[in-house]
Image 1 (spheres, rainbow, N blue to C red):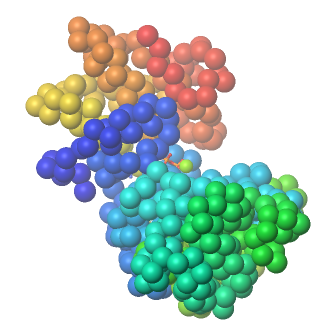
Image 2: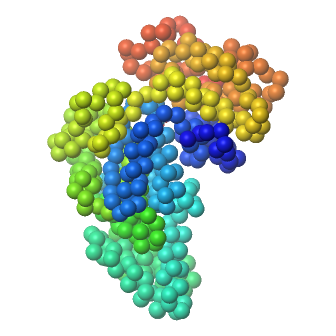
Image 3: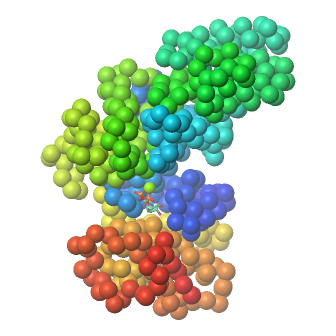
Length: 446
Ligand SMILES: Nc1ncnc2c1ncn2[C@@H]1O[C@H](COP(=O)(O)OP(=O)(O)O)[C@@H](O)[C@H]1O
Ligand SMILES: [Mg+2]
């Protein structure tokens, strides 16, 4: 994917440098970095095609911290945008869930609605433009008269009413089109607020004169996601991809009843997809192994989910099985990490494509250095390694007289956190710098 003639745009370069330097996964230009995962990506692109063909899909991307779940989710998000899908994405948190009784699922829907992205607006915030584009399309057939437009919209959104809660969703769209036609900003923002699940009570929504019966509420955000999928189809897009990361937040819910209620929503999604009753919608969920496998608090605590997501017992470590909804990611290998460092170096070099900031030897030395510092675990915490490497290149770039050899002698890699007891046979505690153990990420000290 990252062949040499694939030009790196300045915007991508900046996004990559900034994100990796801050220890987060970039949202743009991921193909320039990508290593490995060819089979997984190929399979997941088939899912995207299936959604675009009117089907549905659900996949759980499962791996340890640092295995590349978020990277893969972000990469697929970009692929989906290229294929004219609309993408919504959010991290789950204590107060952002799939089901709740106190606004916390509404809050997830709100976050998803705000994140709504299209190819033209990959950074999100595209809901208004989709709605307005839809209205403009419909209005082209009506002479521009408000009443006629409203009737035409009413007709176009009719199919939504066949879906659960579709009446209100359609009503909010019609109200938006009226306000849009009349240049009524208050009316527009009221309708948008409804679509983004920003009303916390029916009374408030009714008071805003929207003519709706209900609000997007905590118990049914999956139904509203299906409505959103149906709407983006009407608006000319290929379908909807819903990307949910940090699913371990559900595993971390202490209240068993809340966990169960959330897992029930996941079961609904899985059942709908497996039975073919969802259309033009796909889900990608990233989570750690305990989120899936723990039989007390993970998805496996739900019998039905366990049987649907059961591991293929023949697919051991290092063997792939991509036929089921679970995609397991092994950690990146040291070889892959090496290629990743090369890719990062190439991104840095785009300013001056003839000149690489450091030779291959520096990459090897850097990896050796990381290994010596934190032992074998270093490639399981690639984020730290990557961040330090980006910091190293940044210093070299800004200080033309600096030599990488000298800098490498002074770089300190502090592991993110202890990574299991049985690990790091190669690292003796004494080699870890006596820095602040609470330092969140690797520190690169000069
Ligand atoms: N396939 C990949 N190609 C290139 N870089 C990757 C890949 N997978 C992960 N990374 C990088 O490794 C680091 C950790 O990945 P991340 O997606 O944050 O892991 P996780 O979400 O599983 O904790 C990030 O810096 C990310 O950019
Ligand atoms: Mg992640």
